[in-house]
Length: 70
Image (cartoon, rainbow, N blue to C red; front, side):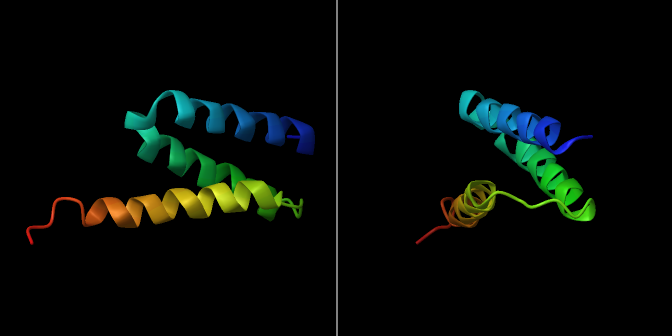
């Protein structure tokens, strides 16, 4: 898959995450796979994709503690 096609696929995933936050975990895994594909092909991963992925991971960590009794 060409670099531009991969970027389009990742952008579509980011849109889906915004539209369907309840499915974020599944879509986040797909995002990780697409980023991994870019890396395995030796293509550059845009910094905004990395920041967004890190932000999702931070939100996941925060979610772990939302249900903890105090």
